[in-house]
Length: 276
Length: 222
Ligand SMILES: C[S@@+](CC[C@H](N)C(=O)[O-])C[C@H]1O[C@@H](n2cnc3c(N)ncnc32)[C@H](O)[C@@H]1O
Image 1 (tube, rainbow over the protein chains, first blue to last red):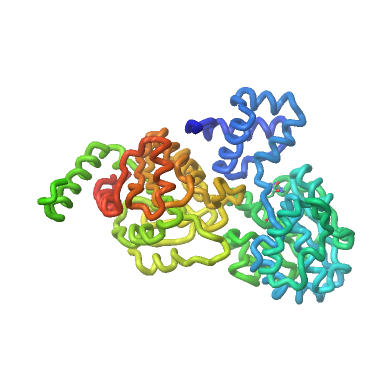
Image 2 (image 1 turned 30 degrees about the vertical axis):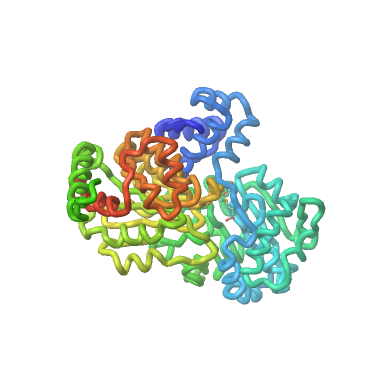
């Protein structure tokens, strides 16, 4: 039985690490949830048996360690068709509207390993909108983006996602969209041609295109209110008039000023539309 | 206990015992800032009864972490909210912790507490197959409130909560575990008891009285 270890790192030390990472790597975590950061940094220190001193010197002296740190300190958990009712709502309430646009540009911010973006691609394909669409997936994390680009997932996981897929009310079967070989599932090429994955940091990077739909789910729960508002403004600026904003199932537009700029399309699934 | 003692006497003796205990622990209970409740299989009814019995002036915010499937929409919060004198709700991202409120961790997210006493939802990996995880919430709250935490662990079919209870114990918070004989599923309380020594191991009736004594012992102005 393992002993209970308390206070591997204090909140004050978390602040030190935040400052340190900003100074050395130009990465600003100051708007991130301290509770989550503390938990994740504790985990790194425990897994790698690092003291605070060792952690800091690794961050300075070992460039490849920072990428590792970035992966561990952010939460990358994702699924295809996570929250099936959300995808159902997008199909029923958003896609009919999107079909009136000539070009449909989609931005999936904080896309992690790509499962959410491929889910959107499937949705568009089923409504015969894929050929008019272009989908951008962005994240701060190069490693997750590499996985997203490859589009190869564990076959076991795909079987789980199939259940989500069915619950979302989509036609056919998820297996129409991947090729299974041994224990790997590769997303079919047809679904990948209009997709681009690249690095974009919601904290420090700005508008890079105009979109008809932006989906940013389960990213802003890790941001404080100030940073949340800043990022929602960035999305507002990046949306075309009457474009759609999709947030996670626990992320509603609560800031009154910002809420005025959007119409609510689905209050439960947190889907909004930019007012013209 | 001799047979000749009536139920009432037994009850009075027990109340005395509890009063002694809480007097002994008075200081630790009095300065508490939050009550945490963790439960899983077999504990829902008990949680329901505990929360619906809380008095209007209950002096502390309450955070409840129960394991439930994300596939079945459960409405225990809604039902309890209409029953209870307190505001019972699913914890929302960035909610500020306030007395008079009972927060349930939503299914499929861990619930964390920030140093500014607001809540964060976290969709990181399940711990011991559980999301929400009792351990995660108990530890996160103890990181913010240190020894000013009262945590209660109830019935359940896995070992979630044991680490959390021992973490709080280690930080000198006040820990209560349901007596395994009273629990519908004894695995969870037993795991905690085996891992470290809780302050109180209580039967269901004793848990109700404990909550009642809290209502009067805790320092309202703290
Ligand atoms: C929990 S995942 C969400 C994945 C997916 N959107 C979903 O809901 O399933 C959060 C992702 O946000 C990314 N992220 C965190 N901070 C970011 C930032 N400042 N800019 C862009 N992405 C960020 C993380 O790297 C991680 O991949």
